[in-house]
Length: 351
Image 1 (cartoon, rainbow, N blue to C red):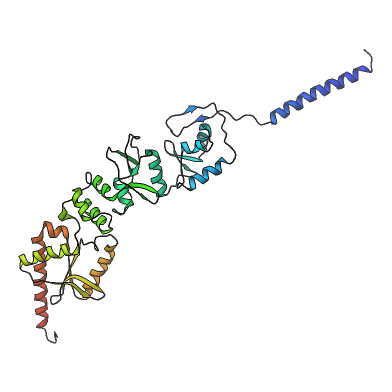
Image 2: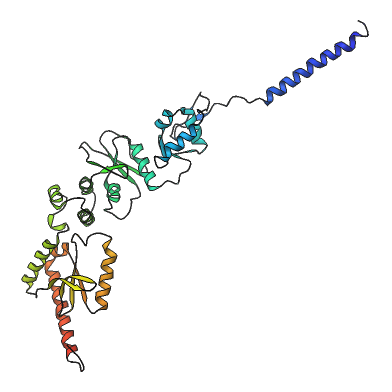
């Protein structure tokens, strides 16, 4: 081998070695395929291995956000698959916190701070396509009770999933009479009261029936026909109350009051002007609603400040314990008469 060929051979080996080093460096810098992920499938108790690479079509997150915007922040697994997500991609979003599992196959998008409507919608999705809000949840939505219960109740007309924490699912073979309120289905007012008649106390049921009558969600005839309550325990009309009240006054031989007596700025239901005694009734169609409670208290305070004694009588008291109502009323009238006569004997009293 000549002396001139040795340097050339060494230079060639150097180029081959350097090329290999650079090639391996480039390979290390290149991105590798995403590792296989462990799926969630919307059920935190069960996990599975998925052979699919976690990937989703471009722009799919924007489509998820748009879908959630129109559904109170809630989406279903089947909807996500329909817009192009694979099962592995859904599971990846659950693990990363971009989807929050509320029920199996039902997710909140982005965060778990759900609105009341979101909670209600999620329960319907979890219970299936035949579900409608019912029982106390329907009562709250119809405003028959003042607030939502701590759990959501729905009724389904075919076999559905089991009840779970925060969700009670009732099954029925009877066709449901459904109404749509704020885009969410619920049982009609009369069906809601019928369902609740099996679980609520008489007093609670009376209040809800009175509210339904006040808001004209049901009629007295339909309520009576359904047999939910004794007809005498539901809120009556003014004429019904007046007839019964005057009848009991006659039996007790008490003086007849003036109905609709004006005491500006109010009008008293019944009044004995000489004795300055007023009877205010709870149970007429214009007195039964919760919104009237504060007005009634303000009315009582105004009358008392102007020297009137206010006696409140409910329809139930008039039906169940009429004698007790009359005795108390008689005592009040006698006391006021005595007080008035004592005042008349004082010097300087003017009639």
